[in-house]
Figure (spheres, helix red, strand yellow):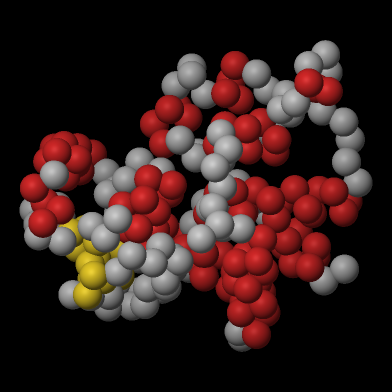
Length: 211
């Protein structure tokens, strides 16, 4: 399976936006964008400001931000967009809802991981059960009523024991519910675009694919 293997901090520097790809590190002084807010590469070493971009370039950048944020590759992201365009309603809102329904994103939103990349790894390693069934597919879409829980074998890990101590400080979005006592999450309803804060412009993404 193809996956991104370069440094995640390069993606934030490339877009000039904090994409929150490294969890808690993004809130500290170690954040690469705080230390060096220039595009990666030797060509940008002496550049004091980012060059102006065209309207098309800005639309492309918004698409890249969404891809990087949710950890998808180009073909997979395009499939999400095609599905969103076939649904009723506003395509940009539909796209955001589909991305939010990814299992790895839900694991992240529930506070089971500090970042989506970490959540993706947790799912791929088979630590999560979706409505009673073990799954290792981070991109599968949850639906209203689904229950997300840890496998019994995974609750013996040191990571899980540490997570239980930290989970009290976690807040979850309104469309999810978290039972902190037994570390179980539930999808109360499908997410609504207005409830989700994003660092990209969905309308610009639609305009990019519609050109």
